[in-house]
Length: 126
Image (cartoon, rainbow, N blue to C red; front, side):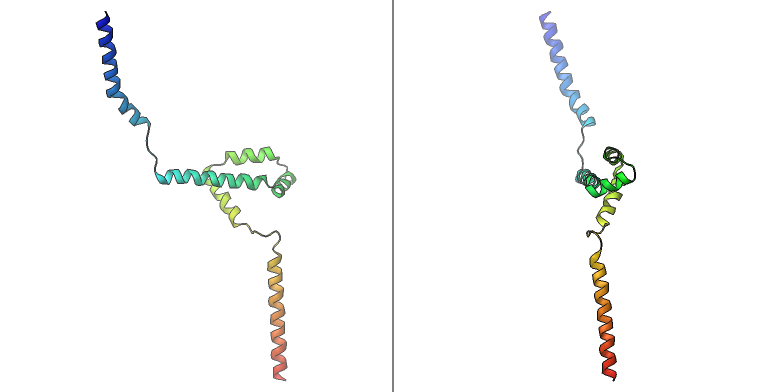
């Protein structure tokens, strides 16, 4: 009986040594660099959208529209990777300044320079 159990265990170990590497090969696979980078970028973009939604001014605007902070974060979590990528691109395209006052100053400065140029040209003709 002892010899039978030893033989059975040895055969079982040999069978496992032969078959398990093939089973592990079908379940585990290497991922490419592109896939790893895409996952990291997707997570970074999702974090960007989450931090944007968590800002106080955005929260105030969402509250004015009737959406709570919890609902907004749940909706961000429910977005697909493509939707998150589109939103992150739109966030990147937003102006960095608060009100665009620099544009107003630039336009006024150009207008003053044009008026001054016309004034100088008119005085030169006389």
